[in-house]
Image (tube, rainbow, N blue to C red):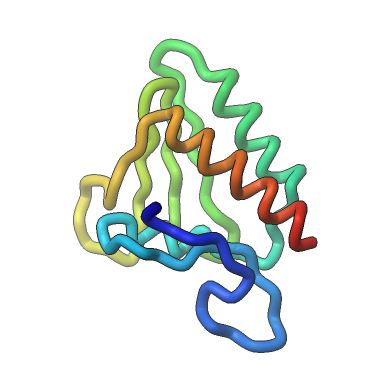
Length: 113
């Protein structure tokens, strides 16, 4: 596993935030997914929109209050952290990896709300 879900991704106190602790530096920009406004409904909207994509359609999702942009295609998902100076993605996942992550993240948020 390259990450672990947490409510304290920045080791903050007195503020519940949903995110991940990174266990593999190759996905460091995923830390930017952390946000205190996540709901299971918001995550489900992303999953539904992503699953509705066809052909070369894409769906761009900017995590609120974050520098993380997720660019979703029907076969691959690209993660961009605007704080990095590179033009190419920070990392990518297959569509299945992304949906699997989002489903688990949704359950984590639901269980910890």
